Length: 350
Image (tube, rainbow, N blue to C red; front, side, top):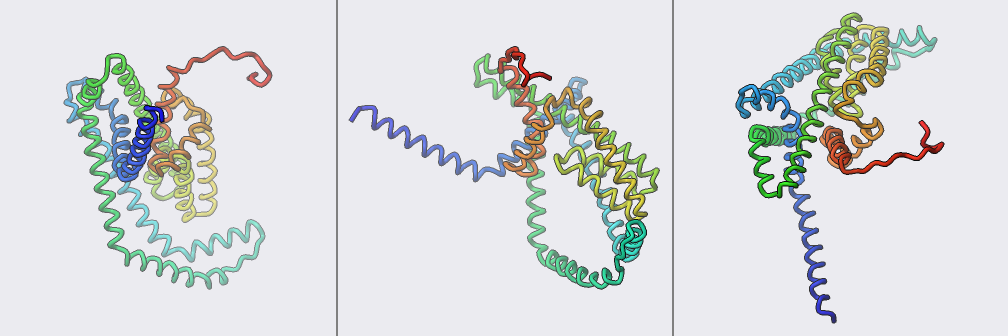
């Protein structure tokens, strides 16, 4: 037996054992790692604003607290407005549901020449109501589980805020600690990668915020002109959800105003749907490429694939973090990938 063979077997066994232990630790610490990753990206997102305030004499802790306050005020106003809208409109829809059904059936019969029966539909409503009541009773009986889930979400949110505060308020000290164990050349590379991540993540958030504001203003003007109830709250809903929820955000954002417009008249809902579709095309081909050109220089197909991959690996959180992460990796790799002149060929002609 060669003298190196037992050492090789021992090294291979130790490597496999360390790999298995590493997988076990990652599985056990998955929630904590996701929490730290989320905190890091949130710190990247508010870093430009914190640096701007710190350059004007603010202490970093105070500047970070001010950013938290701005985010909390906006989130509280948004959730409060949407909550009041849902409560009032749910009551309104339940009270007037038979009348809405009657109006829609009459409109469909008059427009398409059909002969839908209102009596047949209303006969099925008690069964649907009983099923909904049964589901609501089951939901109420599981109040303990719902409360435990809510407590867990609040605990994770507080943990994320704590980590984000330290990563932002003590960002320079943290970076100095990381760089202190690296040689000078590696320090420059790490700081450069950190700067790219801050620029891409912050730029992504601020460009989305600008698109959300433009979308909210445009939809408010349209809904106010059509006489849709709660135009301001719905406009905020469309702006925020369509920009900050990848892939499906556009459909979720547009569905609510159309349903609310349906309570006014079917024709109003149709006009609302046409406006949302037209604005989405305008945003996709005119606004978004100009606003995000400097922050996310990424092909739409690649961006969509990253969103799907992030959602498959991490879940909804991964879908949200996939785009700034992919843009950071793309910008960082672009500096090390050597590019050559492309030979002229029919397959490469543009």
